[in-house]
Image 1 (spheres, helix red, strand yellow):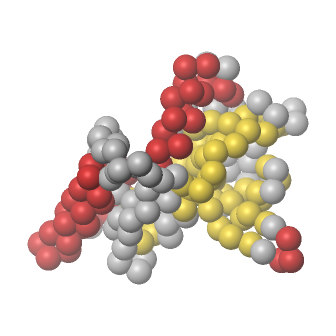
Image 2 (cartoon, helix red, strand yellow):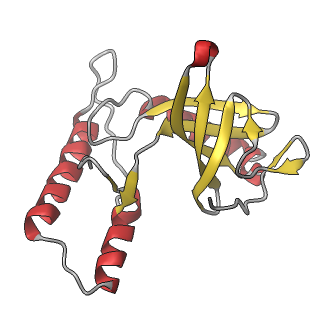
Image 3 (tube, rainbow, N blue to C red):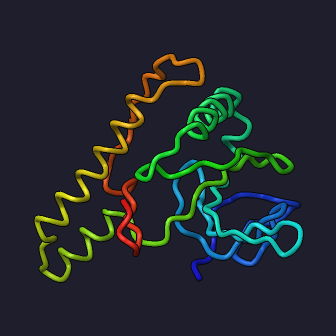
Length: 176
């Protein structure tokens, strides 16, 4: 398991693998950036209910930025309305103590950047048919978002502003 190194504070300590965060148990760090760290987490509910999720924990310095928090909430309100096989699901936006978090679908696989990097390290090329399939699935997801209408039938005019290999996930079962 990867250890967390983000400076998130929860109940006076750094969040790390094995910690409890509300109803979530942090299993391992999946990655981090300047704004947040994403953990594989297990959500536990009543009667033995369990679900693996990706838990994006926002860095505390951003939690103090009202404009950032409003932007985060607006983005989550939009994302939760999306339901397409090529669009990762957002389940919840919450706050525990002073830490904001987003609960997202956990996609078991690798991001496209890692696949491309590992392929180049092994001097292997991605087969054309697979590259075309990935491109087609990404295009279908983007088209869905672009054409999406809200509950009143109004165009949502969504544009993904960060289409990059790091944000394209390939599941072990072939989903993009």
